[in-house]
Figure 1 (tube, one colour):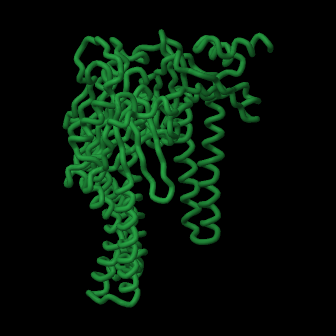
Figure 2 (cartoon, rainbow, N blue to C red):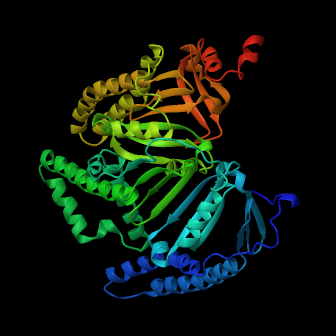
Figure 3 (cartoon, helix red, strand yellow):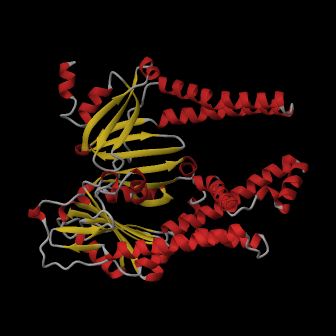
Length: 505
């Protein structure tokens, strides 16, 4: 946010502070990738450094001198101070900036420490405000001492009104038995692909052509000449095993030491992390709902995770990362955390009767699966069989026979998962099949409605309704409602928004 009016300017008696000088050491972390690339190249060439290697080292040295000089200058010109009513930050080298966030607008405080920060006794403090749409209204101090970070967090949230709330303030602590849910996520398969792609890019940048390495070529040659109906399943099992280990490591890194609790009956705090620690505090007044997230495999195993719908957490990506209240865990535990976050006896969606959507929704999803998955896959295999190998023609009909019932099952599950309801002070929305989300959103948080419909949806008499909210992802969709019922539903869920348009119609 830009500078406030003179009436809100901090008193001159409050001393300005600098970020910790050890921040300059943290800024040197960018050296790791280029130095690692040079090291890999040196090892691959038997210790010989060619002309390209020396040029790379010279570029790194020059960049280090420039970046370090700029970092020292930026650090020397960065100041912040915390007054009784605002946090002020002065920064910039060529373009000076003065940013002020009144304490009454601070809605969340994120204290993060990477392994390098922890080694140096530092932490990054981010204050999210009511005007932090897209993260532009935030103030981030990178970095201050650990003690200063804790002092700032307490001071930034001290303005919130105290509340007297009963019950156990601790909503969840990490249970090591929850680790069994870690492999039931995307990272079992997708994580292996991401890791392999990252390694390949690093080696390619280092000038190492992986496909020309002798043992790699030999491995692929032996794999192709072996019995594929044994080696292919074996390779898939190996990928799943490696992915499961990676998912376990990622789960432990993100959620070790988890503690979700109410602090001083006014802020919801989540502390977690093994190597990189994170502490996020959300003001109670900005917590407008929760999301129960159930990916397909996790749902089959009776698990779920919980995310908060809150303002001041940053842009969409930052919100998804900072809003997590509970990792994949037993569904019963997830329901208890959702209820505790909303300060309710039970979660609003527990035992709720959802209004189902029209039967035409199933037909639309079946057609979408046929046109986007079954037909393209079959066509590709048929063309490959005609041009390359006749055996692929058999793969084409096997793929069709196997994919049609799979697609039908997924489409049926997606249509059955669609539902919405109004229960007490909450709007409930459920949708998704690969990841089923159940949203409980405070009705008085809805600011506007958006009705959208494609030509095909209009022919089917359907419309997608989006509730605009100044929290979370700022908009939550209710897909494929019956068009004739959507306006009355919106009017009942959030009175006073669409009634005048209904009267005009």
